[in-house]
Amino acid sequence: MINLIAAMFILLGLVFFTGGAVGIIRMPDFYSRLHPAGKLDTMGLLMSMIGIALYSVQGFSLGEVLTGLKIILIVVFVFITSPTATHAIVDAGVRAGLEPWTQQRRGEES
Amino acid sequence: MKLVALASALLCGTILLFGTAEFPDFGDPDSPAASHVSPRYIEEAMAETSAPNIVTAVLADYRGFDTLFETAVVFSAAMACFFLLRIFGEDERRPSEKLYRHLPTGITLRIDPGGKVPDSPEFERIDGIWIPHDVIVKTTTRLIIPFIQLFGLYVIAHGHHSPGGGFQGGVILGASVILYAISQNLRQALGRMGEAVSAVFCAAGVFIYAGAGALCLLMGANFLDYSGLAPLFGVDAIQARSLGILVVEIGVGLAVMSAMVWIYYNLASMGRHQEGL
Image (cartoon, rainbow over all chains, first blue to last red; front, side):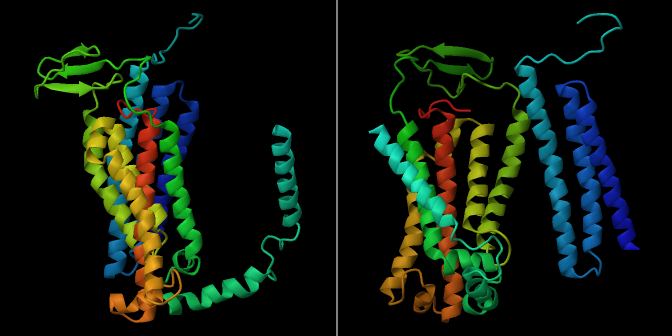
């Protein structure tokens, strides 16, 4: 039963990762590409790490629970660092003078 | 002269290429290494060195000479960067104007060379590439650097039982200092871990490694045969080998950490150590 739930979580995480990968390719410019890269990877990591943590605490012994907690600790650190990295990249882009992409009207040349 | 150099290089290359033909095939189960050496390590490493991680046992104990000179290579790489890049004194072509920011008002003063430097806690010296809104990055790195360093120490100390060891842990520790230098600025990082400190630590790491080997000689064993250290540690010979591996890993970690930081300082500031990334 717990294996099934863990597999569901990991699959859900993979869905988020796939969305992030597709978004990086499909989004039109630098800033909007960072959106899937930053958010969906963090979310996918949360889901897949919850799945792996559930998978590792099969017997609820002390060692297994500690392993699960360590895996959750990875999520905590990624939740702190990943938005900071995205922030730093966007900040560098703004200060380098990169214009954000805007929707152009049909027939209008840039 | 160039022709002589070319001829000698070609000759050396040809001999090396010729020599590779004599090597056993990749993954050949009948090669001497696979038929005598590897089984010995796999079967005896735990019993002889009390280190469950065979990689660590091979790296730091059975092939200690190899790792000793690898550490020396890291040290000489840092030394080479220092000798090639480091420039002492002011830059004549680009005299360094100093920028000071008045904290309460946010006004930046440019002090030309020879000008009077404001001596007040309200002024903060800033770089030419100063970043205005870096509170988030600074706070996050402040939060995360202790954990990175703790993890680096864990990787060094836990190399007996899990993947890791001196090189990996040293790189993690060095990365934490480099992260500090990137997120704050180079001068603050130099204040925390100066050039002299990193140079001395780099040499001290190699010295700890070679010194552990020499201590074995003094105790009457072979060079880098840690079982000779047993009377010093007060344990039996096998435990002494395990502890000797730890001593050596600490030396490697120290050397690698300070080599990384030292190379970063020289590369990031183009050898001047005034303004960096």
